[in-house]
Length: 231
Ligand code: CA
Image (tube, rainbow, N blue to C red; front, side):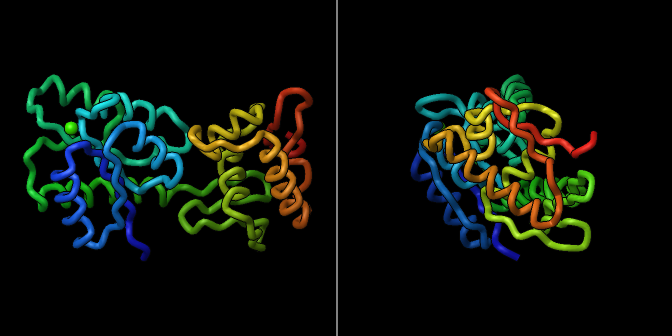
């Protein structure tokens, strides 16, 4: 089993380093960010398995960042544990309203933190288990990262895989190239719009090799739509 990747968003370096140290010792892969802007870039680039989010950051608040994470399609399933020095009950409500999955008040023990992390990861794993996307002759096993055409496995590149997973959870709707860039590549990545066309072409070709034609439709002047042919 590969180790889970945890992003620590915390501007106070001593706290961040202490938490990172404990997590690494527990076998996690650790990423760190000292501000909201930095965190947002790391999140869309590397999609961590879990985020520890400090409430008070120098640029924007952990609550605001959590709202953004939970709004974006690609990141909304990443569990967030909010860390805060504030103990007031009202803040806890605000934190959870933003979409945070759990909440921990500073100071906390390493043991307590690890127990929460494991609980949240277990919860999100059980949600993932049920993720089997199916569209007429085509199946994506989200847990095993496998795409099947009937009994045959279709091997896709990472971008084509993300594109297909996005389409299968967002069927029958037209997406512009720039919307696809935001959703599949991430809002912080600079890629030219025609890159989308290249990957769409590759994905279509991969599907057509298994006689799965017509799933991705070009909508002139608008973008692309995914739907099962004949629907
Ligand atoms: Ca802080």
